[in-house]
Image (cartoon, rainbow over the protein chains, first blue to last red):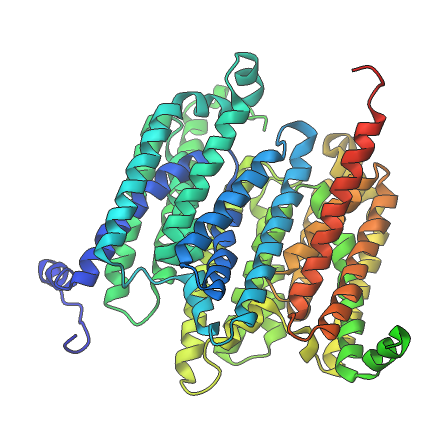
Length: 299
Length: 290
């Protein structure tokens, strides 16, 4: 690279500069696919109240990768093996009624034990310590062409499956009891969704690290679901917010000395705070315009 | 080799004595607090706090103040914010998203501080600072650090026991408790602050990321084994302390095992055993003809 990149006031020139290098083209391409996939999966995750599961899933890949490297296997094998195993363990735990309390302790133990295993593998495989930060916090850079293709295939497959099961999954997520009574196979849907979440985080965290996967899963969906209650509209909004946040993060990080993880999470959180403020303002205006409708909403 | 002389050798090492002292009381606090964390379905809040602790510690390193200042400011601050933003009481779906979005951002800040710290002192240190904050260094505690940790752990344990009865009431049935004049909102806030203090202190002993295990595993096992709340509370504290003791002994006996891993492995084994035992007794309790 010739010298440090500088940001000028000419945005077109900046973007051209940004896309001049193949590694940045791949980062932008992969980032876009990741943003779409994570926003769609994350939209269901937020709807189902499974943020904790998603976060655990994004961390479970770390010991998988560390263990695979220690054994001399490819990191990808470790990511997929551990994430899918975690999904199957969580699928075996019932999550309705009283059992929800137990579910959260199972997730917590799973995550903590996974991290402890990661620490063990890292300390057994000495000289890997610098890799820990990369595994956890990621970079988005150094993505090859074949990685982009793999990611694209996986994203298309995952979104196709979600499109097939989307309607009953929304029903089962919003009211599992009623859906169960109407013979929607809630247990099966929940397992399929967990597996999709596992495969997505396993693939994406190889490129971005655990932190960014979770941020891209939860933030766009959380912001979108604050802006509208209409499911289709909020799903599309989540994808748009996810793409914007990723592009902005990649672009700004390119011209800056600080890590992309900081920028993407900051833009994502800003989107969420703005959405929450907009929702609050709308609720306040609504109460002033129609005071007779200002009944307290029971949680 | 005689096992008793082995234990004698182990206890004669000052770093083991410090680790045991700090670990015992941190575990006592984590076990007691963890019981209510699981009961109130706030394990995700514990997860978030353990990451916030990371950011606080790295921020303190980057700015150049004492690590503990960063830990306590970040954890207690986040706990107060959570109490103010959340709907209080047991974690609902809305809290889930608030916690997720905000701690992902705070972790992003942590990455920024880590970069600032590692680039500011380009020579030594580098990535290791972040790793040791994440995974703790219980064998590296000095005598004064161990006494402070034990004191704070004991303090948290005493406060939890003092408010255990109303907190239990508010955790099991918030509405009825509020109707009976229990200050549920105050208890919810106070409890989150206690959780924050525990997170900040435990981060030094077992690392920010393994704190979650000490909160969730002993309490989850205890709740699985008994329906009686105070028995479960005591069991949870006992399991947590046992995890630390056995884990430290394991790590001392097998030096290739990191102590944080050994502690977490024991805690997980207890959790899995509790699941197996309760699953079997549930089968035995089934009516004869099903």
